[in-house]
Amino acid sequence: MKPSARRRGQSPASHALPFEHAYPRPLLERASWSNLNGQWDFAIDAPARWTHPDQVKFNRKILVPFAPETPASGIEETGYYQAVWYRRAFDVGRVPAGQRVLLHFGAVDYDACVWVNNQPVVRHEGGYTPFCADVTDVLNKAGPQTLVVHAKDDPLDLSKPRGKQDWLEAPHGIWYYRTTGIWQTVWLEVVPEHHLAHLRWAADAETFDVRLEARVAGRSRPGLRLSVCLICKGKTMCDDSFVVDRDEVTRTITLPDPGIDDARNAFLWFPWNPVLIEADLKLQDETGRTLDHVKSYTALRQAKPIGKKFVFNGKPLRLDLVLDQGYWPESGLTAPSDDAYRRDVELAKQMGFNGVRKHQKIENPRFLYWADKLGLMVWEEMPSAYRFNDRVVERVSKQWMEAVRRDVSHPCIIAWMPFNESWGVPDLPTQAAQRAFVQSLYSWTKAYDPTRMVIGNDGWENGPTDVVGIHDYEASPAKIAARYADTPGTLAHTLATARPGNKLLVLDGYDLSHLPVMLTEFGGIAYHPDSAHTWGYSRAKSTDELANRYFRLLAVVRNLSTLSGYCYTQFTDTFQEANGLLTMNRQPKFSIEEMAVASRGPIGQRDHEVEQKLKERAGG
Image (cartoon, rainbow, N blue to C red; front, side, top):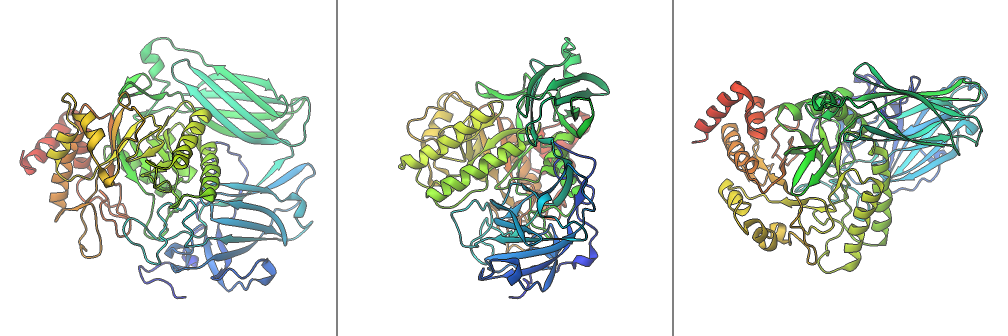
């Protein structure tokens, strides 16, 4: 099996420790942790013959956390193989009595088994969600410890959530290179026996209430208390402690309400003013001694549809979103660095968008951290399977629940989307079981998190949903304007008769006329010098033509009062799919200043001047 010739990679030796200082779980952060990224021993087991570490012939090196398909890993093998193995030594030193050693994995695709010192410690199925093992009892008393990871990932299995990972050997259409094995940070923590294992925040901008749920790990112990200090903009808003009852704390904390609207708004999280409430939490014993100390954060914000409009903190807000698939040319689904996650958030805002729809990917929490901190709304979407059967129902349900539980406390997330374009449920109009599947995940998500919008199946065949999402790649702005015009009966006629993707927009039996409507995919205008090997939904011949067409199309969509927002396709080029506003290396195809004005409309005199130039160049 030879490395792919698609691009030249770097050897692992040329890299510093990836994500060295980027704490992998920003909503429950401890001061002390050990990053296990870096060079590991590696082996590919193409037929998946080996079942135990003793059988493996480790003959290569890989740079974790980059997948072996990527140049950044130092492997760059993109063919078919069923399994991979990883090995490395680590040292935790002497573990004090009463302390536990936790081994964390951000994500391993797809079915992972982990051994420490030749003892199995955890198995996890699912390529996009984290898992953890308490390895204390299998550690050697002295000297190095040996960690082995076995990841099985059948490249032809269409009954697992795989997102945009191609089942053909080479990428085709809208599918890309596969991701096998470890692709997010591996890390260690030494924690006390009684420690905070889970936090969940929910903050209400209307009532100024913050709800906290905390779970404590360890054998039941009386007398524990949780001290909580909340600080916002340098002001202490809460400093209290609560009894830990049966290893849990559930409290609603009412913050001081400034009263006047302007004063209240200063404490609310908006995309243009992302105010976070910093949280300092200490788990204490009956004597007041601190057992565990973590940092976290939340924010006061409320996002919901009211009638046909989207309302954010009590104010109508148009959603100006861009489709973001989260791939990089050298490192695939993994950003090359934490700075790259931050840069993507900054770029999306600079391009005039107030949010992103992360497409067919449960994104790394580090991206969500920067979206929280810098102010970017996020729609989270479940990677799809491509068949419907009992196994798909079990896998998708379990992994979607894991993803929502992981990310529910991030202020940036405003919507959940378990299905896209009926992928994995291809017969929704006729199959009751498939309808029930979509309904079940919609209902579970609403039950678990009633504070956010849920889009049951985005694009077409809308059924249980809070927003009617439409995918329409019509290239003509005039036809888009006519199709969604604010004239009596026009939108209702479109919803009843239009067939994007040759699919019904609304399933029979559902009346969605009272809900907001969005174009959640449209545009897709490609520009790339290599037109023979790239594609898009339509094509511009030059960057000027791309800028002009983007401006004309967005001018129509932004001003359609029937739409509560949009999501343009797409943020960057993704391998052969060249319809990004940026190249895959994050270079703008035309002026970012012009993009911003086209995306959101003009703000201030300078933007009006830019808009006038765009109009003149686009022919009025």
